Length: 90
Image (cartoon, rainbow, N blue to C red; front, side, top):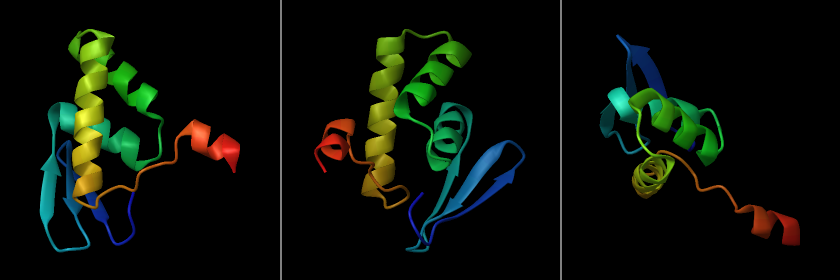
């Protein structure tokens, strides 16, 4: 999770306040992915959880998770993690 972001769980929804003051609410599939990503889970864990919970193909779940995470990064809610290749080089 990015610094300055505040989160509350209310009635099964994640209420997220960005450092900019913008408020986001994640429920359903967005809530599942948010909770995992916000605690630092690998993308694969979020993909597997989404595929399992909603009975969708892993390929579709992966596309959906990657798209959602790109949006989270663009809005400043999470920081991108270095890829394993980059970490291995440093």
